[in-house]
Image (cartoon, rainbow, N blue to C red; front, top):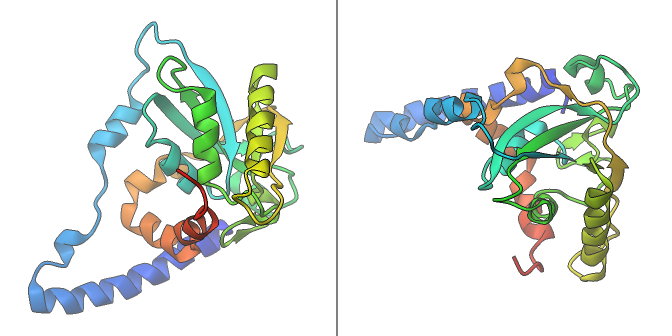
Length: 230
């Protein structure tokens, strides 16, 4: 979803939700307390420098809106930091507006910095599959266009080997009714997104949650992976 539409979508939802909340609070007095609030402790944890001496590795995944992908990968123990950004295209200095045009070749992606002693790349792959629609090459959920295409960007021959094996295993499992269209691509230059896109789900949880639900992401994932033994 283009940035103007994405924020407009959230704004309309906020207006409707606010009206409903005001009507409810006049009766019960408790609706406002249920509104999600920013999480400063989590934001502080994410902005803190990595512990000295910790071995790290990098993985890069694209699965549609990077607000959502960041929120999903931040849940994993062993993931030390996540950076939303742009990769896979031909423009040297991509910006959100340029990428949203669909003409740069870039896709929204997430760079995952993790501790390989606490979480394996294989586990990150498994988590990736369960949080993407791997049958949709034209975008993800309500976000359409090349800039939302799913992909796995590998940083080493070992990552490629594991990613290809994971994709093949999933394809043979019979869990999905359609072919897997996720490309496995050698990682190239990754450009971090503008600051307002980092940790969006923590800074603006109400808008984020409305956007995610309205986009049908979790509803589609639940239906898509209903056969999976996860």
